[in-house]
Length: 93
Image (cartoon, rainbow, N blue to C red; front, side, top):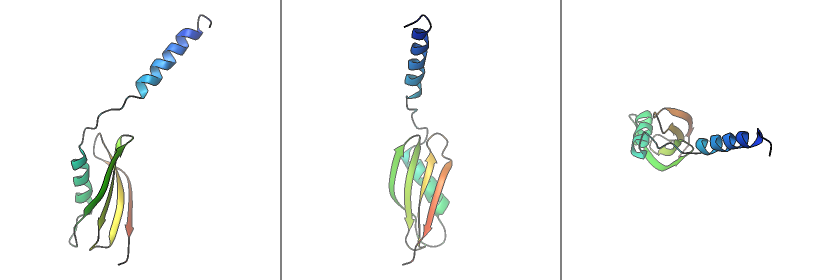
């Protein structure tokens, strides 16, 4: 390796290793669930959480409200609790 090759390779490896560290979530799974419940609560029925997964810096919360014929999936940022992505479905009984 040349005189410049080794330092460039070292900086590249250092950059990659620091970028792969995961940041711990600032909100809990229970807080993510309550955000979804608050967003979809209404006069009809009760919002039920089906599943919660945490990956890539977000909580993926699957929910349903059987009485209101709705279901969906929310992607919640694990640092600030904002909704990143929303998918809601209406289904017929």
